[in-house]
Length: 133
Image (cartoon, rainbow, N blue to C red; front, side):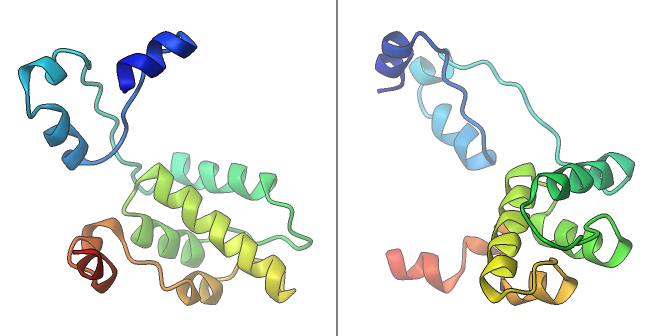
C-alpha cells in the first residue's frame, strides 16, 4: 500500500511514531530495507519548547491570550505530552476547542487538566485500549 501511494502521488512515505512503528517496520528484511531511520528527539523543556508554545498560541483563534509559555501551564502541557510534538499540538488544539466551546477563550492550567489527557506512556494499559481487545 505504501509503495502504491508513493508511486501514485510521487512522494516518499515517512512513518513517524514511537518504537512500535520501528518494530513493525523491522519485522521483515524487505520492509526494513524500504525505510531509512531518522530518529527525531523529543522536545526538552527549555526556550525552544516555550517558543513553540508561543507560536502555537499565536495561531489560535482565541479572543483572549492564554500565555501558554508561562511556567505553570507550560509544565502541565509538557508533562502530559511527554515531549512529543504531536501530543503537544493535540493537547493545545483540544484545549483551544474546549475554550471556544465553553466561551472562556483563554486556555488555563485548569482547562488543560480538565481534558483528562492520558500520556502516551500510560495508554498501552488504558481501559480504552483494553476495551478494543
